[in-house]
Length: 268
Image (cartoon, rainbow, N blue to C red; front, top):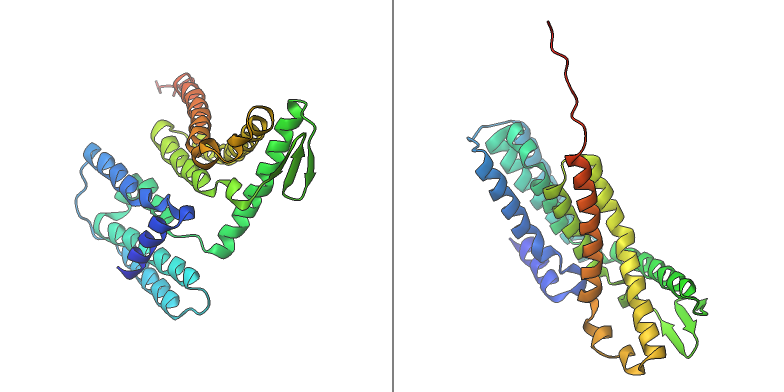
């Protein structure tokens, strides 16, 4: 229980881990939905015991590991998720595991990413967002110069800080896309495609936010640079990105519905 409580505390008080609060409720909802479609009887399978032993091994490593407490927490939470999956497999067997594969492995998203890795992700999003915003300025013929994390347009210098990477909304968009792709699409490659596209869509969202605030602050009113749109407007651009994901899902779902069915010749 200690690793789980520590993870929930991290998610409740850390902006970069907010998405974790959604993982377990969403996974449970997906499992309940799937369970109603088909009933499963308890069935012992020895492979589950192996996963349980693996989870104990990971827990011991996490307990004895030196270094950062965040790394220990990540190892312990990984062991806990493996324990959950192993318990399910032990009770219900491989056929049930295959039916609940996505919600069970979706639980790995509850493992908090250590800061040493998360900082690298934030830095990557920050640089990609700068490039996206610079591209938008150029498309709209606004002179722009880039110097490190600073974008300069006529009348305004924009310092793109790590907070502009919008790591929280980017992770939320990725998690939401994974669930929607699982629910709305049937083909695995289509699901993977949508999740992969969600990453550049998130970058484009961040670039659009920098561009819009920069244009409003330099052309309309400097108050936009410190106003509500800058501080609390992330939800607006998140919804724009989510609309783009829905459009892509709609297009791919139509492709599945109109795909020609394979005819199997009957034997005479």
